[in-house]
Image (cartoon, rainbow, N blue to C red; front, side, top):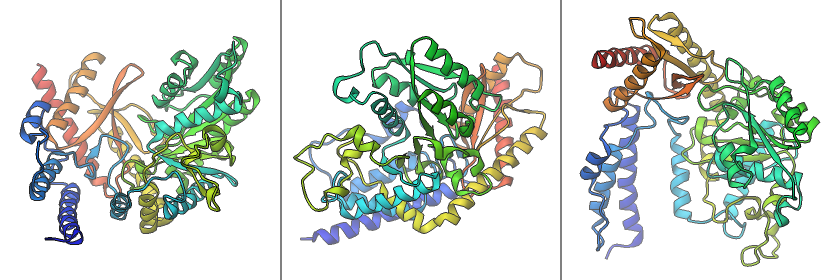
Length: 477
């Protein structure tokens, strides 16, 4: 009878081979980003029914190989669809070891090593932001970090709201740019404030919040008997990658007694770069910051940090001191479970710590500088071609553009063709990019943070986009 150790050895050997094959395929530009199948076809092919009896491990591993073969290769240089891409191999080790350790991050007793690692990471991230006496905790994503920050702001503004709810007659107001992440209005909805509590603040032509419009909105809300208690500035908006001017926003928040949160889930990594950290000037004046290492720091999903300028704000917001979990022990002061919305919390600290060990500050800095250089190169190429239109002047690591048909066409037709060409590229598996509507028009988005993407690749990508556009135009003729 095989020992547990030998079974695990055999399993991990095959798992490592699977991972290596997938990552190698992802790095190969000659391979597609995805072998696309429509949902019904993919469901038939994969045969996903659950068995009554267990199956041999060899068959399960064969299933895993088939699943990876049909999955999106998000580490591919031509995967531009979301705000993440290639991951650091050392971070994969962190994911595997976290599964092997199989513990939760609520107490030092249950996770002594990982508690100390998370403390160290929080200190370092706070230092990069400029929080000299701050604190932080890792969680499942930027949406949760934004929700937790809004909860902390509510607690500071109305200290008894945790116990008795909001005082009668209070009309809270949340302010965020018109291009802030959708998790901000959703957080207001979850907190029972309602979507109507959120006031969108107009942006400039690059997608950054206008401070003068924020000042106007704050004054208008206060005059209407509302309490502006939470302002969210964004550092790296989802579509345009724009950075709100935090240094100009912070004094307005102080004037109105509003909590300033910076959603730097995407753009926080610019803090590593002396060339580009000016985009986050004033972030040290924020009350809280969300930062997702899984976006531009080569860490697998999910890994998100919520950082607070003042120690104690997290426990003040979330502590409930469950006596079946938190005990009066010598090391209890290191417990982190009362600092978060979650109870059970996976070990995300290890993969970030290992990735940092492998890459270092210099490696993160190089990734950031490379991304901004790629954006400049992409902007130059798009501007030089008559078959493309630059939608926004870029601030961050995204480029917004659209393809233009050869003949004059109404805006609605151009929008439809850009949606159609994007669908063609996706189904071909050659390139995956995303789109949205800005200012009423369709804009295609390139996310240019892949560390192995080269300026020469941009020509191939734009040629492929134009080719797909012409094909879509012919199909609609």
